[in-house]
Image: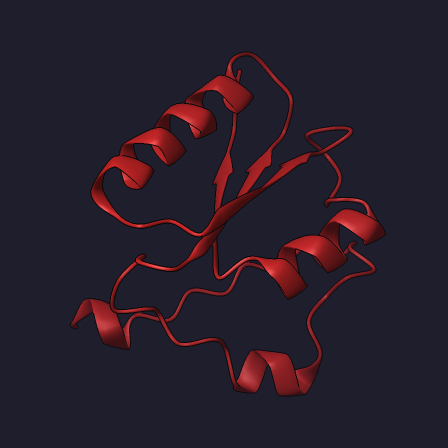
Length: 102
């Protein structure tokens, strides 16, 4: 299967922010480039997760013309982002990367 055809949707059944049926049926298309993208960074706050995501962002920014970054720090590893953070990441970011520190 080509990367363009890959579709991954992760759902937490306990989350109040589960995507609607329409959102699940029509996920965003994978961008062909990160030029002009706003990158969301969602860290769980454990260990070096923020530092790791920052390093990944800097590597990407060295290769692409990134338009911005939306850093999100979750309050706990066992919860989704806060509602305001979820709104920011879904409305402002073109792509998002999550990181798990331990």
